[in-house]
Length: 427
RNA sequence: GUGGGUGUAGCUCAGCCCGGUUAGAGCACUUGGUUGUGGCCCAAGAGGUCGCCGGUUCAAAUCCGGUCAUCCACCCCA
Picture 1 (cartoon, rainbow, N blue to C red):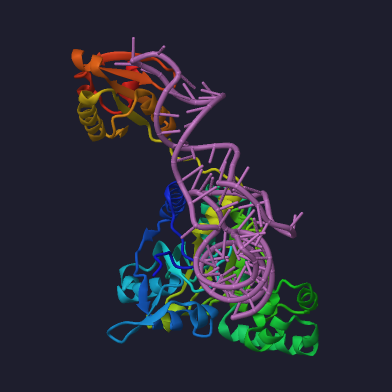
Picture 2: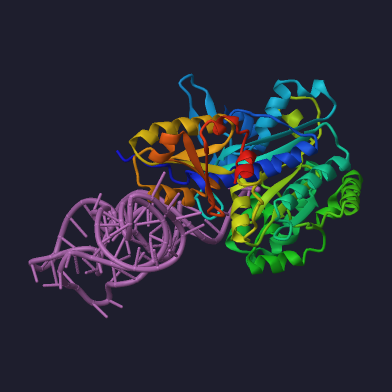
C-alpha cells in the first residue's frame, strides 16, 4: 500500500505557511476593526446542514461533498463552505438573543470533491464573514466595504474587480426564469450544448456562459432581472449602490451575476480577477434573508461572503504583490569552536531564548567556517562566538554580521542583556 | 464526469523524435581553498528504482501497451 497524500490535497511547507498566516491575519485584522468576532465550527456536520442550507439541487450538494455514514448510522459531510455551519451554530447557540446584530467571521479548511486544477483543490481555505440581524442596505454596504478594505490592504485592489447584482426574492427570480425560458427557447439551437441543458435545469446560469454564441444570444435579451424585481428589492439595491458610491468603492453592476448557492436573496457580489485562469473568483457573497428561518431559526436577515485564501495567495504571487512582512525577526547564531565550547554555547543559546530572542545553534562539532556560512544563510544579524580562547578568559565574542565588526565581552554581560536592542548598543 | 499535456537528482529542466559507452546541467546541499571567521570566487564530493507494470529488442530514460500520479481546459465554484 502506497502512503501518499490524497489527490487534490496539498501539504503546505515552510515559507508558504508563513505567507498563509500573514494573509490570514491581514484579513482578519480588517474584520476585527469592523467589529466582527471569530467563531469556530466543526468541519463535520450532519449532511442535512448542507443539503437544506445550500439547497439539495446545487452542484455542491449533489456531487461535490465528502459524505459518509458514521458507525452510529448518521450521514455526515465535511463542510464544503462556511455559511451553512455558521447559521446552524448561530441558531443552536441562540446568538440572536444576545444582541440584535451579530457579526461573525470564520477561517478554515473546506472540502469539495472536484477535479483539481489551477486555483482549485479538493481542500482549500476560506475566510468568511456573516452579519446577522439587519436587512438594511447599509449592512450590505458595510460588509462589502469590509471585503474591499481587506482586498485593498492585501495590495490587490488594482488586480481585481468588484461586481454586484440583485437577484431579488425567490418569487421574483422564478418569474425571471420563466421569461428567460420563454425568450431563449426559440433560439435554443444557437446555444451551446451545455446551455441547452441549462435551459431546463438552471436557466440563470446561461447568462454566465462564456462561449461566444451564448453571449450573443443573451446580449439580445430585452429585459433583465431588474425588470422583475419588486419595488422593495429595487430600493434596496439603489440604496446599496448609493452607499458604495459614498464610500468610493469601485463596483460594477453586472446583471449577469448569478450565484451557485440557493440561499441568496437580493444582493449578490463577486470579487474576480482575470489572472487565475478560469477560477476567477477570489471572494464572493451576498444577502440571505431566508436561510436562518429555513434552517429552523427565527426570521433573521443576514449578509456575508467568503474569500478563497489559496486563490488570494496565488494572485499575490502572480502579480508580484509583496505583503510587507512585519519586521523580520532578528536572529542570533551561537557558534562554538571545540568540544568544550559546545556545551557552553547551548547554555548561552537557551538563556538568550528565554529573553525572547530567536537563536540558532549547530548541534554537531563543525568547523567555524561552516558555522559562519550557516549563520550567514539563516540571516543572522549577530553571532555569538565561544571558542577555547573565550572559554579560558570567561569571554564571548560578538560579531555584527552586517558590518563584520567583532569585539569580546565578559560572559556575565550576557545575563544583563534585555532583548535584541542591547546587542546593538554593544556593536 | 469529458478532453488534452506532463512524469529524469531536494528544486527547475536537458536527453527521448533517429534505441547502444559510467544518465547530464543550473540552483540548493556537504567539505576544502594553512592553525578560529560568513557573503563573492575556485575546487572536490554527495545525491537518480529515468513514476510503476508489462511487451518489442542482443540492447530501452529513449519504441509499444497498460496503469498510477500530476497539471491544464470544460463543468462548477472561493
